Length: 291
Image: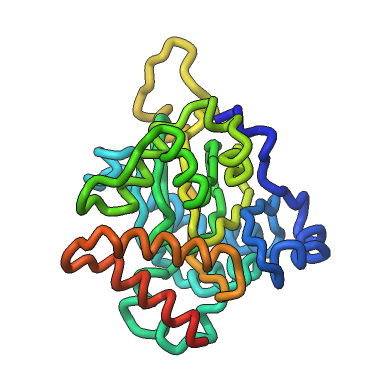
């Protein structure tokens, strides 16, 4: 993943810098990921005793889930009395349009896109499309991880380079994951693909905004690995990565909206019967276009 260093994500060193320059990302047709270091309002709410207590409980509970045991990662809705405040603060860092779209106020959409807490194991490596091709804002609470963000258009370029096509009836998200897993250092040096990629080694306190229409390739970076290679249970827990995430949508005049439409069409072209994901993505697209 280090080969993507030349395309490092834009980093705002503090929230004041973000507030001054956010017009570079908002109000334009270009949709790019960015990072804000240690935003103070978010830091303050995360330091509250009730939130820290909730984080501690989830750090113990989430590793017991079957999905964590099989994949090294898990995510659940974050249940705390401060979840609305955390969501409010996270949304400062996006150009979210969902609040202006009445169709997104139904219970299914609200439940799907609520604030979540996620955790990754000390040795997690993963490639995935962001949920339902929607953008997300991630706050890293503990641990370190490398994140490579590649747009759907970049995935298609990589697929062409590797002569890969989606199998009949294959969910397009699964196809994109296969392509990401097949990518090599040489792909990172290809001009067309490289321009669709950004990279960041996320640190505690970092906030990353990933627009709709992107895949991510991630891996945990152990903070305190054992010198003898013996991963005891306490060391595994110490080197876990944990964070919070909320989803958002950009308006129809943005590049990420156009990329999302391309992704939705690719999924629909697979003609998978009763595909709930396609119906949901179409619902998203229609809602934004009617706003």
